[in-house]
Amino acid sequence: MKKILMVISYLGLACTLLPSILVLIGVFTLQNHFWLMSIGMVLWFSTSPFWMKSKSLDEVEE
Image (tube, rainbow, N blue to C red; front, side):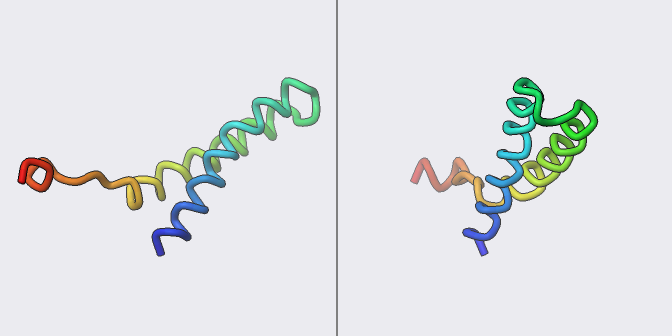
């Protein structure tokens, strides 16, 4: 399950980075850029917290 969440969140991260580059070189329109950035943001922020959990302070101190 963790691997699936990692793949989905990295796809979301790619959807936030690649559209900016594609608009810069003229492949995408600004409207497509906004849609892909929104989709990427939702994917990244909805899946990454579940696999990026850090240890609690109690576990670290012991």
